[in-house]
Length: 329
Image 1 (cartoon, rainbow, N blue to C red):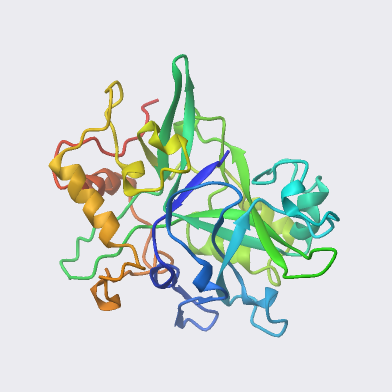
Image 2 (cartoon, rainbow, N blue to C red):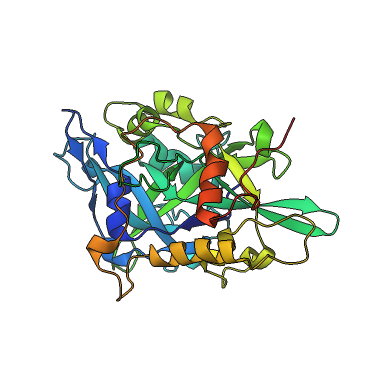
């Protein structure tokens, strides 16, 4: 399943990270529909708002369906047919949608058949392993790419791109339209099944993202073939401070040593936290030209798995710190 996500990028850097090639091969950055509502978060739970990618044609009927826009939507799908005046009165949880029932349950089947497909964006997500003494949280994300070209441009964090379904709900008595989404889940891949038996449906690569978003060119029955588990992920254990959504700080991401009583507050981990804090947009002390320059994950080649641990160690600033790892079979 997917119960918490992280998206630490501000609105402008999200546009840069989501740059893509349009149908004519031109490099584009998706425009924001409501970027003023976006707020970075290190511990986002259902019912909060998060960033999604979708086709511009959902907002402009004559637009090219391959053209993309960014929008902030509320997590937890409210179907258009819901009749009560308060969406919080939904009688069931719609933050996740099982892939094996998404074409059976009316909450998801209707919008899915209408092409209301989106990509939910995140640095990664948290999942909890059930243990005898409680639950151990992990942070799960794409393998990351180190910059080996020697230039000054840092390629940035590769965002996790999760398949989602969205819908539009209008209050029966009138008012603003509410856009909401759900994250599709599948059986967990072998490497993470020891943590939980379900995981988000992750779209790995530009071609998968293009097909999922372009509802006018790719019909539903073809698009749903993309909904599969992926092995192309890494993870590391994190502190139980993430158990509460009230804890929304960079400390949530810091790798820990399993068996330790608390998170080590080393100089290197503090350096990582300092970088994470300084990378947030919205800080009055940060000018736009001082922010890291981001090269789109949708244009460069997929990053190899083996580089992720090194990048985390680079962030931590010290060799030997606990790094991202995969469970051995």
